[in-house]
Image (cartoon, rainbow, N blue to C red):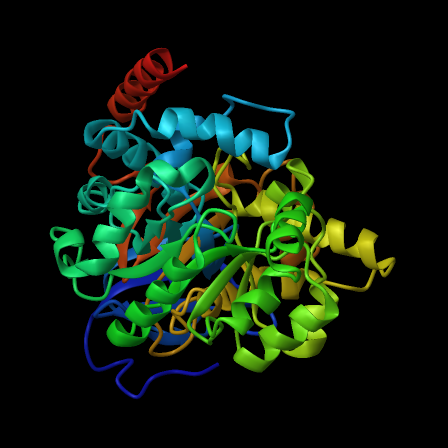
Length: 448
């Protein structure tokens, strides 16, 4: 067991005792340990009997102590308002109906949606997320993040075609003067909240827009977060308009690069995968959404064999209906065992790694997703003592196949306790849910 050299020199800010630590490391076995936090970082990992002094101690007996989940592709601000509104339809019909509501969004409604989404995420053990803004208003979520302190990369959404043609003017204005567009959204809390560029999709962004996004990303050093190769309709659109695949067309126009998080990627060809590997494009895998909207099953084995980073993500609650990474882990594991015909493919440890360490790399925050000395203390504690996971022979199997978001007892971000004994610190959850519901119903009634 490793201990920092200053482990006994002073009092620590936080100690987590009694639990089984699942570090997120590919080769690390779960083990009993005390996790000590100082200055927002993991300062020591002690054996259970080693002494320490801490300002606060959390007793995690009967629990798993794991890295906070990293959700590398989602849309909470907009999709909270669309959850359960339209079911049992294909992707393009779904997108068209969703746009009817998005046109009626206002900042106050988006604020309450963001607050409710952040509560759901925090209580599910998600400590960092990659927001693709198809609500076209970032500041309401910035306001919410000031109250519920998760980490986030907020991707400004751009589109100028298809059902999103109505936001062409706004999108081009934001690309032309990004400083003006991001007033009130950048640098609000040091490194906790970052910005990205989020062109919507190849069927909703013109070639000049893709080129403008690439130029701005290069100029500002901002990551890009977009949808790529999502479903048969997109593949047919690209074949008809460009005579090739999305990935190969983006290569032709000089867009691909290591700063991209590509969400879905459920319709990749072998050549597409080669290009992702060549350019070090990262992938956000959303298996529940892909299955629900019949968007295809991603070739995870092919991507891994090519050396492509693949992280796990929930997508938005409109297409997933929850922000529960436990569901995503279980569905990913069983889907890829079935699709490959190989019950040994995608082990429980690999699945946990996809939801933590790999997802962090996929959203360009590689310092996250692990419990290791010096790493940010983004930690989730999961109660694994319930009847639904007993007898608990294998804690990694318990987390992947049996655990639920409601089993999370504590969520910690940079050493700060955001969820304490199952409740979000400092907010009135009941009031937030009520206000969100009121605004959502009013939006629905005036929109459709």
